[in-house]
Length: 433
Image (cartoon, rainbow, N blue to C red; front, side, top):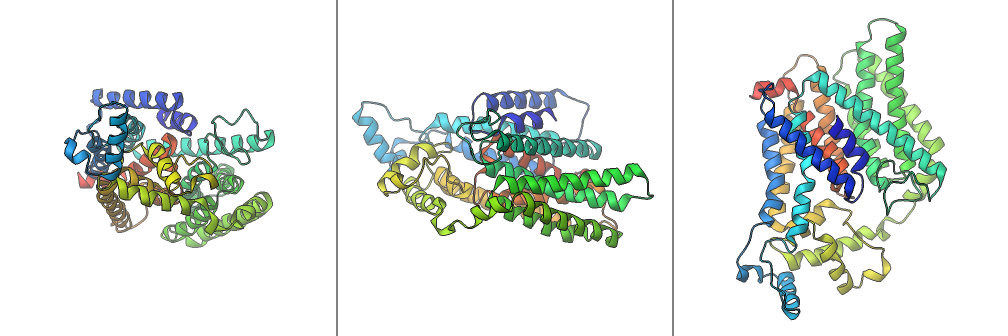
């Protein structure tokens, strides 16, 4: 819980002291897992495969390579000529900047520690972890409201540069706040209908619990609207739609359907009241004039020059400006620190090895989903429902990464790793073992 809390509160920007503290805590968490002998539950093999594939790319790029092979690529050859002109020796690693790739490797530690730790939790502990996640999401929304009320120069904006006109919460980017809220939305909806289904009597405490969870779901929708993230709004709508067939498997469907319909209606009313004007301004902008299309053109040119091994993970800020100037895109666009498309950015940085890893991870994610939905259960249990909602949230983050870079932040990378671990329920993990 401490790892998750610090990651969300300190890891929403572009590196710095906050990320360093979260990484140090991740090392301590890993050492504690190794030293502890109370838990004999191993990490599920599926998660071990995912973790190995993720680590393979930066480790591969830190390997040395022959000078003749290093000079074969157009980008490497030009870099060698430039370094020779200033009498500097060439560092023959797969990555053009091994130090940047090593920093990227270190940035994976919080996610790896979280994935390993969550995979060994019991269902009650997982439930408590999700409550902490929802509480932090609520706190981020309240912080975003305070940022809007305090103006563009608010001291409550903890990162620079940042989105000064929108709610960003603990993040530097409004899209990343929206990504967190979208990932939490399925859990809030699932908790609301699960509590309604489990209600046995008209007690005040049960009714208060249901109302509270519905309020959390509505706050998440409101936060997505306040962020003015186009991708967040669309993925939030998709999240609510994808939850419907999952919730249909619950018993007492009429009661569950009433809660779901109430959520949709009140969410629409909240969005129209508090966030419609801001969203319309964003949605009315010409999508074809979005800078992402120009970024993709420049990245495609740079990727051809750095193929087949890529320029090195973490080298985007060094490689992109060079090709941006060559293609004439620079004067019309602001400084580009990411591709706003993680697939394209990793294609530039990691080349063909990334393509192989990407296909493998997509197939693994699809297989996890098929395995969850084909689970042989006569009734939907809490652990299986949690796993399905976690898989759905992870899928939404993957889709968001196609149009932005939420998983480049320590905060959302940690949340994504937690979702992957939650996607394997304790019962299924024991059966597979």
